Amino acid sequence: MSENANGYKIELKNVKKRFGQCEVLEDVSLTIESGEFVAIVGHSGCGKSTLLRMIAGLDVPTEGTILVNEKEVTGVNSQVRFLFQEARLLPWKSVIANVIIGTPDKNEATAAQSLERVGLINKKHEWPKVLSGGQKQRVSLARALAGRPNVLLLDEPLGALDAFTRLDMQELIEKLWLEQGFTGILVTHDVSEAVKLANRVILMEDKEITLDMKISLPRPRQKDNDSNYFEHYILDKIMKLDEKAAEVRREDYAI
Ligand SMILES: Nc1ncnc2c1ncn2[C@@H]1O[C@H](COP(=O)(O)OP(=O)(O)OP(=O)(O)O)[C@@H](O)[C@H]1O
Image (tube, rainbow, N blue to C red; front, side, top):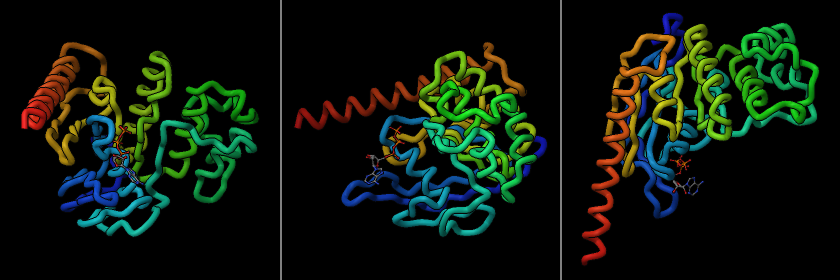
């Protein structure tokens, strides 16, 4: 938990999601406390992004309820910000103008402070097209955090970055979470990233939560034997689930 906890509590109660005949989530219940940072890992297509989209009010559960700050989600909430795999900057606006969009009162000074925090104040008058992928994602982070949101949803935002930039961004996200204390939910395929950033890692498999593990490591986090222990534990669990799924498939084929 960040010492500056300023985040909203998030509750999912018996959430089910179907797209047509396809059931994506089956009875998911989960409570994320104010200021927690939770990472969700799981195979492609298991419903991680769908879960985030429903918390953001961009999609609705087929059954069940989602509460953010004790209020049922009925649409988009400006205190809940989303970071996607692509930076999604407006190409016809300068860097600073993109960040101003994220401020509650369209305030340039607030936007500049946010750019300062991500180390890009010197790029404020540039166009997005001249920035590297990592810089674009920093601007996107500055825009998302400029309004001091209570919740930040991160859907694989570092997935397209090279390994060095990715590590830098992880450090930055951890630092900003410690400073601002929002509730964070990160969807990632990278277990080491999950262990670096989250104080709780959730594994989703087969339409439900199959592991909910606290990561009790000091911050800022280093990669060491303790973090390796958590990574190996989670990877082992994923491999066991894979083996079980393969066994079920083999039985199906035998029939
Ligand atoms: N709008 C939609 N209409 C129909 N099916 C959808 C829709 N959105 C998602 N799905 C399906 O729901 C399932 C879960 O999708 P989702 O994007 O949540 O998975 P994910 O775990 O985030 O995957 P990935 O890790 O590959 O991003 C997939 O089978 C997907 O095809």
